[in-house]
Image (cartoon, rainbow over all chains, first blue to last red; front, side):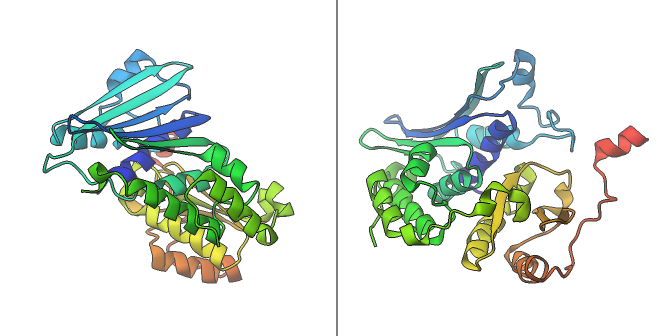
Length: 182
Length: 136
């Protein structure tokens, strides 16, 4: 996977499979030169044994295939850029995946199309509450699918003008983070 | 048209678009719509499923086809990603493999609009590793 937005699509899919009702994706550009990517959900969670095994590419809860590369690929991306990945999970309560990257590291992957990724996840999962938060020392923005759907009052996110406007709005917010765009 | 920068702008946009709102009666009956499921697990995403999904969402809307586009997990056809499952109203689902924007366009024009079959269908006789093991 070429950029972090694709990893977000992938990890969020895990939360959806864990029957989450609310998923929060948080991107934090710290003053310490680190980029933190947090994906938390209120899904069914995992026990300690599963958490310990989840970074193993030959472990998966799926029955369609025998490997699970999502978390191991993201761990590799984080570690190759001087960072790390941690997972905290409580059965019945939810899971939080935290990946940390050193922004200035030459192997730090680009963030990619975060606005497009947020719109796609919201548009293709209408029953799900998705919250995207972008945080830096000076800026903070939040895109909440519940608030957006309330504001739209039944108008689908896939409607052409809605899509164009939402992506333009998200892009305008995202472009204010020079940490994410340099 | 209002330029959206906040939720309040979005509400204004909704008012502007009010006449375009088609609260589809069929929306409550997804079986009467074309259903498009794009496999978006690690294998699919790594093979370009995001572009395929965006294409279907944008083009079905533009071409005025009432459809529900959703994402799904891995169907076990990792070798053929990106894969897309299409269910036309009243018909059995069909899975297409190696879908890119060009293939997606062909699927919309030929299969979804006219019901003609196109190359790239994954036969249902193909089974996942686990299915085979259960039998074996």
